[in-house]
Length: 460
View (cartoon, helix red, strand yellow):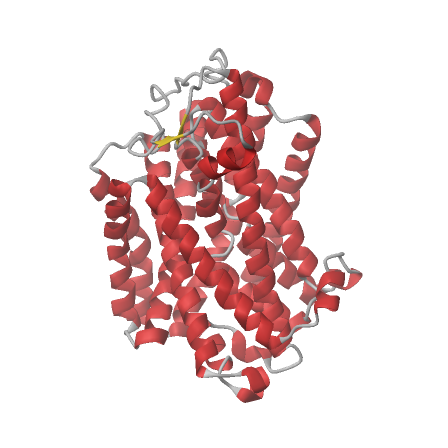
């Protein structure tokens, strides 16, 4: 990679290959949230809170659900440590992404375009666009299946309806970014409350669950390792790194003041870590639910959202707690997750399109194009297979596999940029952060290659 903007000062806008960083990232919301001058911790934390919630959505999207619940159903509480390790890696990566955006005033897409050659930038752009499509596919499928489970809406119609989510996002953008953050937090709360309630009545063995936060040797057995890799691969997703580096810039403060810059980095990190702890709790609840209700039973029936919905009201599988109310709550949480992921996925699509290729088209056209590109393969799959949920579930799994392939293409540039003193100045990663980032990047890349290999082996 080349360092085309190494002479810029930290806190000043960067001029990359395509001009002044292609303009401010997400220009219509960049620097629109005012920050009070007060010094109190809680006042500052509340002012900077919000972007972390949009990022946390990616760590609890529909793509995680079957994997986490299935992990509990097949191996009980064994994989709790995998969720913990995945969450710690997520905190590290999101801290670096937010810091990059605040310090350089460029999102990860802009920084990649500015600090690489045109050829490398083009390859990374194509991979990232495909990753965004893969992410959006999971969101569309989750929302469409939730609509079918709750209201009996045919899948093809449900998929088409998800296109109109973009119009909702356009309206929310007009109302202000704080409104988007508030709605996302409300939807996360719905998911948290639903699964907390379901886990409470399922009565898991919390002693075993807590004990398994310490990694056990059994994880290295072939079946357990494959499921662990699936949980890791479905948890850490590339689009979150681009999104966070952009929306971390929504706060308005004096970027020429070193103290203000430091305050922004500090409280944005607090916000990110707190929200990711919430995502960690929800993923733990998903695994606890699978372990408490389905461990030791016929888990082959739990491979799809529809089967999970039915299992929660099947007394042979879920036991005495099974009820239609329980399964309805599951579908409500799935719909909330799909809507949340739709908001963040659409925003990320805009970040990628503008950051890499500086494509300037009307905002509603840009967002509609991004959405239609993602919906198209889902509609085609739905038509070809006659509205089969199993076909959509296979498409969802394949989208997660592709995300595993795409992840290193965002993690490695992020690690390089945030470790560079020429780019980040005094905010460059400390040595121990750089070491952890590279270890995480290498380990996740190896694990994701294993997922891809396993998927290809199963396919052929």
